[in-house]
Amino acid sequence: MALVVVDFQEKLVPHIDGIDDILKNAVKLIKASKTLKIPILVTEQIKLGKTVDAVADVLESEAIEKATFSCFKNREFKKRLEDTNANRVILVGIEAHICILQTAIDLKKAGYEVYVAADCTGSRKSYDKEIAIMRMQSEGIKLTTSESIIYELMESAKHPAFKKILEIVKG
Image (tube, rainbow, N blue to C red; front, side, top):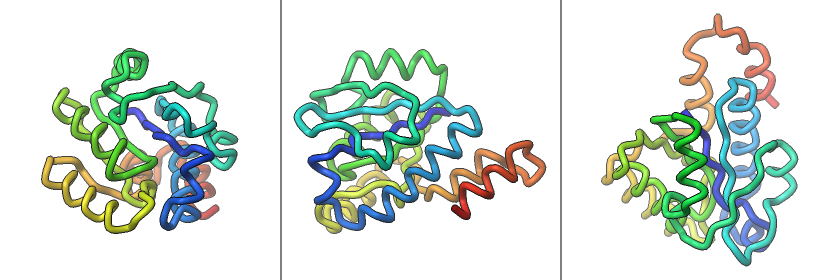
């Protein structure tokens, strides 16, 4: 499993519908992934500035700069993802109808099992996100939420990180 954090950048974030909740949920998922030692890849679309502080402050990964809308069409991203040996990928980020959608479809075509945390994705217009979600579902992408995927990754309340994850989720 790998978590891919897509384009939460300075010039775009202020224009995303529902961004406060999206960022809050994405940060929880990032923190939980770090706790569970899941590899995290971060991307930044050229010309949109740096990753916003709310997300950058909890990451330890250096962002992969990209010009392609699909992360998977970027050579460095593809290599770093292959280096994780993950066969399942969780996607979060913006915009749902552009970079998330294209990345999800390309990953699925390449044989990855793809999950999109819908509460951690957004678009400037809610309608664009709604249509993207429907399209991803029709393409066989698994739709979920941050909390659902966190508990799925733990599998049990007996997981050694359960108490720490509970603090993150409640936070």
